Amino acid sequence: MEGSMNHHFDFENLLSESARTHGHLCPGQVLGVRMSILGLKQIGIEDPRGRDRKSLIVFVETDRCATDAIQSVTGCCLGHRTMKFFDYGKMAATFVNTVKDVAVRVAAREEARQKAKNYFPETEDKYKAQLEAYKIMPDGELFEIMDVKVNIPAEDLPGRPSGRVKCSLCSEFVQDMREIRIDGNIYCKACAEGGYYRLSSEKDAFFNSSVMHNSHNELEIRSKLWIEKGGEPVFGRGRKFLLRAIDKYGSINQAAKEINISYRKAWSYINSMEERLGIRLLERRTGGKSGGGAVLTDEARLFLDKYEKLERGINEIIDMKFRKNFK
Image (cartoon, one colour):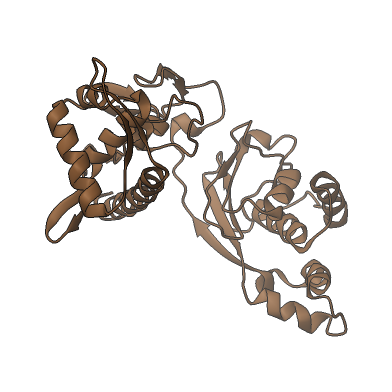
């Protein structure tokens, strides 16, 4: 897919500019600059910061040094929606010419790290050897190049937001069709799937513990996860919600109402969990109209965190397998 190139990419100047922006010169900077030059040439982009700027979108797969170099060379960035980040942990990037509808993925070859030593065998510092070798090694030794197809939905393209809706749980607004709709209700991803953050105040992220699977082609997959002991259930999502509600309200009675079970049933669950898990879940305060107060113990919080981490990981695997088999 080699394009007819009239524009000359000045490697040394681009590398100097990238290092100045990044803050230092490193092997990742060299790889990122060369990766960008190669990818742009392959898709026929001659002036990424000028006349071709509206024709280019770049997908990066790492949050390391090379990504800063790619941004410096191409002018693409998250704020302009011309750079897309997928956290694959790979030294790779895909360059898309949206006008010509062509794309190429450029990935650094692992063996290039070892080959770099052969170019500068007298250099004891392997990173310095890599830095200098990456400047002169042939493209074929440094990179694997793949012609690819990338489907970019309209809501992911540059331009004004494609929509703005309110989450029915946290009341925050969600843009660009990132919301999740379940049974006619609108949720942000943090409320539906679990967020990367957790409130440190008494307004605990109770709702964020809920995990939902995404739908694909109008198909949905649902799963349940629970822990058993001796063939009897010990802990699952329902009991997780009970503990989170107790943590939220400081009241077993109010927590039972929140998840629509009786106060007696809530106590039954708590006693059963403490007996089978072998840990104390609550510190109790007796008396009062609401049946007394309660707070989670440190052991209970640690157990909840471990369970929710397990739950998120399993649901990610299920969702990935679902997409793969029913896409």
